[in-house]
Length: 309
Ligand SMILES: [Zn+2]
Image 1 (cartoon, rainbow, N blue to C red):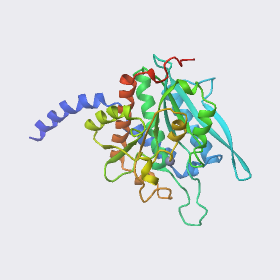
Image 2 (cartoon, rainbow, N blue to C red):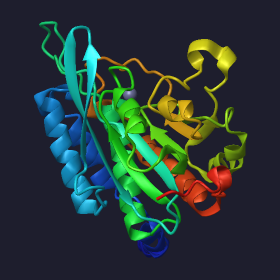
Image 3 (cartoon, protein in one colour):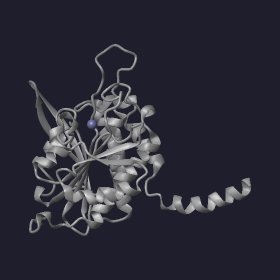
Image 4 (tube, rainbow, N blue to C red):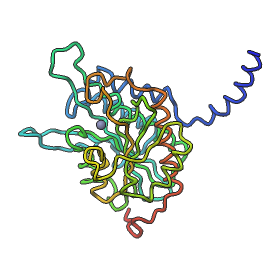
């Protein structure tokens, strides 16, 4: 029986493995590396932030994301009290058949070091938002192998925790005209949920997108729930709570993927060991499936006549 099962399982497991489109080991390595103590909490303008940038830049190069103007690095400045702070966005693209763009984004910055004298002083930000960057890199790796219809921009934003500064800078000085951006997909906290629930926010504002998320939800192994986007729900409306808001303000449709707050949210305990590894892998799969669906089926016509590349 043992042997029978062994050969049986092997027979059926192999084709499934062959179809797996996300490298789970790489995904976990990306989150583990970015949330390590050595990254010092990736606060904007710090040494830890620079180290995180080097890691992401290396991954961009290895995946084969193209650079606009020969660089992935886009510095920007913002004022915090009487201090002028420099942030750095990282972005590049995978060309599609269309010059119209889907922007896939996640912020890599986090809160830095705690000022207290406790034993653990690093805000690791494993879920917030090393997880989103891991997702972004996995999606880029997929589309590098399976060329997209839309041109895909992959944007790793800095300064989200300082008030969506990186996303603000991106839309203020975009690599392609804002009118050429058809859609934003933003990921912020997609790795930590004990109830197997991933929210997708934005179908309230953009009901045309619901059919795509519904279709993926029906076959996804996470509970992909449309919500957290009703203006009357106050703080439960997440529209303004991460980088997608800067796209929304530019009238660019968005879908934001994220989990509900957990006890480790914005604490030093938001560490690699606390994320739900299986949930995370499946959450990234669900986001990838939505992007694939939008890429293949979403009509390009929102900004017809605006193709000014
Ligand atoms: Zn975040």
